[in-house]
Picture 1 (tube, helix red, strand yellow):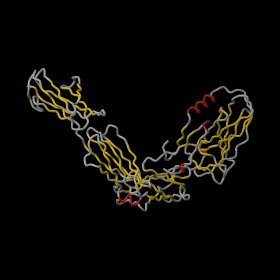
Picture 2 (picture 1 turned 180 degrees about the vertical axis):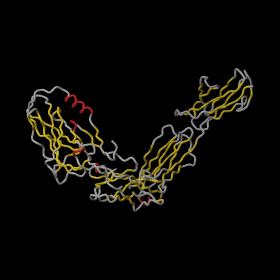
Picture 3 (picture 1 turned 120 degrees about the horizontal axis):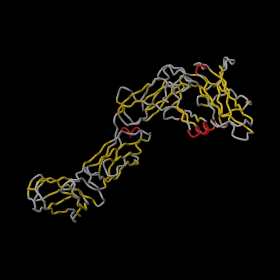
Picture 4 (picture 1 turned 90 degrees about the horizontal axis):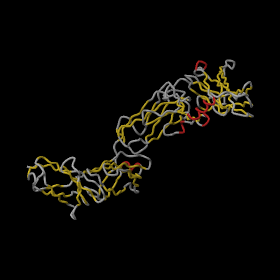
Length: 462
C-alpha cells in the first residue's frame, strides 16, 4: 500500500496464514484446558503501549487492527479458541466497543478490527484482550493505549542548505548540509528523505505465528531522521548520488502515526570535477598492455583527499570495472589491455575520503582491425579477369599477432579458414565460375582467439 494518506504496508507469511486458516476451518473438539491471557499485543501492527502517558499513535481511517496471541494450558490437543477485545475512550470508560475473533489456533496472532466509526481522530483509547475457551475466559490483559491520528501534518517541510545554494553552480567535494523544518506543523516527529522522488514505503513484516515485526523507521538513517523535538527540525549531511549537474532532495514530514505531509524538494547544481585520464602513449595499440595515469581534480583533492578510482571499460571483449587505490597525492595508475575490435572506452570516477564520488571522466580510442585485401586480377570496387580466370587475394593485418584468416566469396557459401604466414599475411587463389558481382568477406583471428572485425571487398568479374 502506498505511503501517504494510508501509510500501511504489511508483508504476511502465506504459509503461516494458510495453516491458521486450515486449522480454523477444522471441526472444534471438546473444549479442554485453561485459557491464559493473550500476549504479543499489537495495534496497527505496532507494539501496544501500556503507559497511559506514552500512547502509541496510529492511523485508523479504515478501523484499527488489534491483535494478541491467545494461550491455553493443560490442553490434551490442539484447541481452537476465541479472543475478545474491548476498547474505550480514556475520557469515557463506560463507552466500550468490542470486537473478537473465533476459532483461532492458540499460539498464533488473532487479529480483529475495531471499527473506524468508533474511533475519533485525536482521541486516546485504551483496549484489552482475553482468551475464551468454551465457557471459560482468561483475565483481561493490561490496557494498551493508542491515540488515533488520521490527519497528516498540515504543512510541507522546509529545506535549506548553507553550503549548496539553489540558484548558482556550486563547487562539489563536500557533503551537502541540510536543515529540515516542520513548516509550522506542531505534530511532526521526523522526516523522510531521498534523492528519488518515490520515497520508500514504511511497512511491517509478519513473522512466525503471524506476529508483527515492527522496526523503528528512524533506525534507517539512509532515508529517515527524527526531529530534535516534536514539531522541530533535523540536520542532514549527505553525499549526492552523482558528482555533478542538477540534483534534487525530496522530503516529507512524518507525524507520530507515520502520516506523511505533502512532499517538498530542494534542487541545486554542482560543477563538474572529473579526474584526468592519461595513457602512457597517445594512441595505445590494440591488444597491447598500456598504463593509464589517473589524477584527481585539484579542487576535490584540496577539500578531501581522493582515496580511490573506479575504472569502467566498455566496448572490449570482457567489459568490467576496476577499483584502483590512490596514493597520498591522489594519483593512481592502472595497466589495461584494450581489445575492443572497433575501439574501447573508459569511464573513471574518483572517490574522496569523505565519501564524495566525482562525475565520470571519459576516455576512448577507436581501432580498425579489419584486414587489408589486395588482388591484381580483381581490383576492389573495379572489374577484371573473367569466368575461369584465376586470381590471387592477399590478406594483410592492421594489428599484431594474427594467426589466421576466415573468408567467403559469397554470402551463404561455407567459410574457409587459412593460416597466416610468418609475417602474419596470407594469400588465397580463387577462380570464378561465372561473371558478375562478388563480395569477399574476410576477418582475422589473433593468437589469443580474438575474432577481429570483418572487411567487405567488392569487385566484378568480367
